[in-house]
Length: 527
Image (cartoon, rainbow, N blue to C red; front, side, top):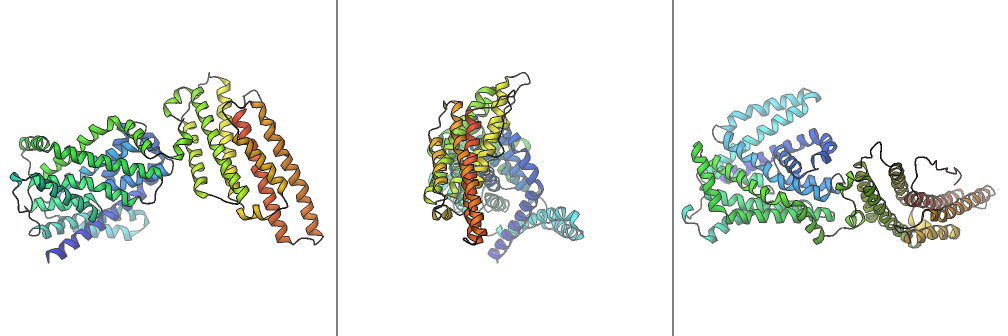
């Protein structure tokens, strides 16, 4: 009967946690994304944000998976993500304090059952109070689940060995059990609730509960790994960093256990705290130690992880460093060189498509992401009012370059690749595009500005070819020599090749010949 009650208690608790997480995500999502970069500029602010998110969602796993999503979306860099991951654990300590202070000093089910009824009433009263109602329901379910777990735990869990005589093997066994609890339950928070419930019912001792918590912390890394399967390399790096961090602090906590446990008990004795409050304090102290040990060195840690799991994205944007924002001329040149690498990379993908009809969507997504990274970097550069006029022109040209590279990227996805190879009517146009791409491969940091005329000439030839052949196709269709559908398809391919050639020229022109404010760049609208 106790097992059925235990399962029911876990289910009620999980339902409450799910409702709470979903409700808070909808409430905070948009504002959170808007201010994310502002809060991740420094190690301390990033760790604080990670702790606040975990305290809000009551799950360090949710915070870490959200962080992986932020990095994947280009909202923050991988290096910025590490303080969030490190601080996330500290936020999970709030769960222990909530349970220790409120969870077992009163009959929580009697106290919070009315909150569920009130919440459902608000939810049904109209859309205005729907989220508030769901918030009340979720909080009520969480504490009703805790009360149910307390009842089930009273006679279920005991350990046969005495806490004062725990051997190395027995300590390792408890850590292993804690790790297994997190993996099976897919949440260290639930493992913590079960541990504190067992402690409250005297099923385990304080020191045994502390070793379980060490194992639960290490188990979180496995839960995060499972939740991020199939992710980008940035996700795999965060998972690896998360695992190294959690396993390391678990080992440190194990080695330093006598000292930590003694300090916690001395502080608790001074305040006359019970075992639940002592365990909450141990939990918090343990995580604070991890933050103090890792946070000062998070940038070196990030660099090491980048070496272990290199990324093509970082290779394309490795020159970008936010510290350059105070030196506009240097920062703009770093952005220009990064865009040059991106253009060559996009040129290779375009050549593969034109020659073989192969469109590698993963590579195009990579280019899209790196362009976003450069745009974000450019937004951090502050040009002084009395600064160099050339810096302004360079900044403007780089924005134009990004715009044309994105348009080039968009055009690549417009036509079925097989049509480009199947149609032999436009071999001249294809060769002109391939000629431009061959020139792109030869681009380097010292390509003289006057060479931009080469791309311009090729693009003009493409435009003239497109005009002539488009007219011929329409005339043949009017004379019933071609079917209308076939004509439309041929015109699309012809326009597709012309637009690619145009954006290659424009991106390259802005990249190697920056505009200056005193110069108005005349664009022939017929090009």
